[in-house]
Image 1: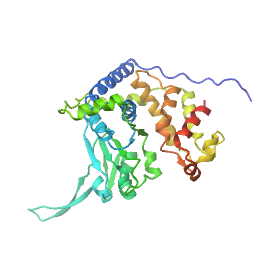
Image 2: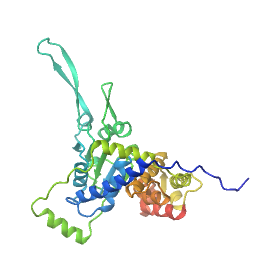
Image 3: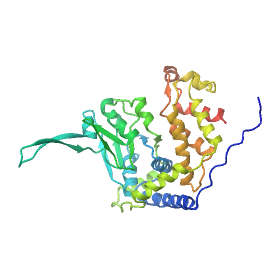
Image 4: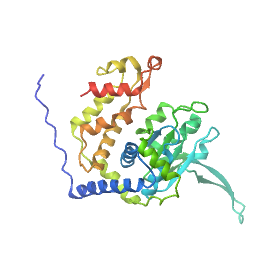
Length: 341
């Protein structure tokens, strides 16, 4: 077998207009951050990942204890983007039709004819905040599946398209177990990123208390229009990725599967099911968005490696042995990054 290196075609050089758009997106990121800081203190990594999800057309699952501004962060982001947003408070008695909408029987007063009219539910928006999504049964959680994957809703045999851009940002409280329903793996896989929100630093907490106990400040201003967001989302798709970057992303994901020959020892011992191909796709798309947000017109290996934890942490199904021995997903991901170079 010939061991000579395989030459790959060089990426198509960017057009001057795309280079200008990259600079525009980097500038937009700076302005969005400035507006968000009117309301949000700290949580820099969470904000960065929300922007990655936004411009790569992905959905985000925000996980953190109560009081970390998960809801405020999403609503403030929607304000800076001049997008329509709806919030659904998930509860045990919430029904699928409360999310998607329902048919209402109407009667024409003059003719007496009756007909059904579809009344759209809160899912028809640009940014949907699914608050405490794990408080509702799987039947209701499943109402989001088609919208998250296909950007459309089917009700009574009729398919209704949701206007782009469409993003679902869900929140979940990790410490409450009573009255909660764990999200099925199929639902979790629809989320591009699981964004962990942690306790603030002491200096940030002091500022949070000062702000929230003072007169309310000015709300964030709109930075980007809907048309500009759609244009920048298309730009992210055009960002070139070298073959070795794609190969590295696929290698990382495949190594998370216990049956794969590259699986690490922790994966073989503690993981029941690894991540699927959707994780590889998410790694590349998110890497493109991260690069462009940094003002670079090419995704690199370091972008992929930096995004591995939020993209894989909710896609690995841990074994009973892992639970018994207290092995966390973070340990699996750390080993993957050490072993797969």
